[in-house]
Length: 138
Image (cartoon, rainbow, N blue to C red; front, side, top):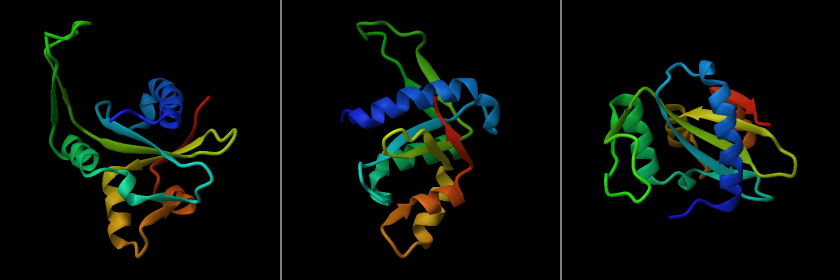
């Protein structure tokens, strides 16, 4: 599955922000899933985070994720495998013109909130409340 164009633009900026702000995270090793609340939407549907994405973030936070890199890749690989553990984060941004604010939410907090909620979607105000960090990209 390809990344949506709006998510790709957001992720490019969020990645740069993350590189310069690693000290704001409790661990230096983690996985991130970047998400955009669609244009003109007031809510972020919980099911926008797929079961596969959720499972990977949980595994990374509570155990370790081992990513094998193929030596057969045409571009080559820097090593045979990566082991990532320590955290699982969801970066969510509401897609609006000139909006630079995004929410960094721990995977456990997201699941806990989703399981307690009577609705099928997260509001921006709720995201602000459960966010580990509210950030602004450049």
